[in-house]
Image 1 (cartoon, helix red, strand yellow):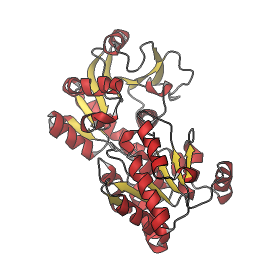
Image 2 (cartoon, rainbow, N blue to C red):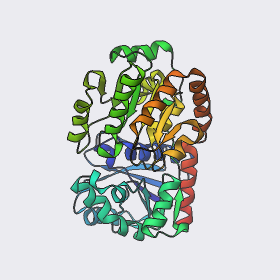
Image 3 (cartoon, rainbow, N blue to C red):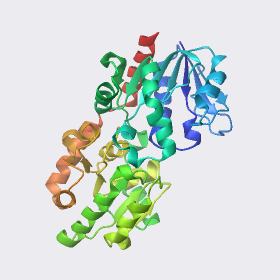
Image 4 (cartoon, one colour):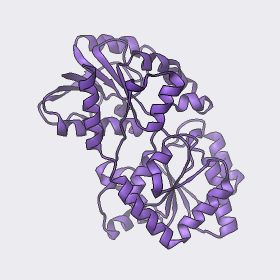
Length: 369
């Protein structure tokens, strides 16, 4: 098989879809030495995401991600490569260029909550998704929830979509010394036991509910630990940040950006709890990262989060700040409960692996030819 995997997106950002793409490529290299892979980069990307083994090769593209004419210009670039399969990890495939098209759909957030996206994002995802799922020969979905959404909301035949769970970077599975963790905490002037939220600041993350719950946690329960937000600013953030002032909690909020991999793993190890009150998540990678690091999680009951948390986390509707405050207080203060959640979290986290994801993806490649 001759397979092209579109890896242009990591040049622009290293968020969840990019992490999925890079880890999948690495895992495929460990199990498939027979197929020929071309890893498509942006030509001006100085980084190289190509595994070292001989059946993987870097190729370059000039067409930018999400460009208005991407469907046409990328197709022209790919036609001469005569691929058996083109795998598009970012939802939308090129119009032409391969005998078979595989796409990965991470969520249908743009259909559930179009008000939370920019006009440009809606143009790219919402306006093209019907065509994308119809033209794809098979679809990989991050979760069973996303798989069911594709079947029920877009009419995709059940046999055309396969659930392929993601996993985490190995840095979240490693053990760290107390000294390593303390060094990261000192750098950010933090003490153990803080409340942690990880992800791009955007409306879908439902941070105003978290801020109100945090205010109640301080006022009603006397919990005096900072709320640490890790992640870059996304879009439509004005109202989100206005709610910090509304609830008068600005002195107790810590904003960190550019924290990834080992330093982020240290924060998970040191946190009292990870909280994810999102309106919707296609997978919820921070929750799985936290479970691997022994950090209890409290998540919403939306999207795939109940699949990721299972019996290891507390799962709540994303509307009631009083309930969130009460649950956070319980997790932070009840030591036997915390230890039970940590133990269950470690056991559940072990059921997710990039090796399994690669094997299922390779099975999809073989199935469509």
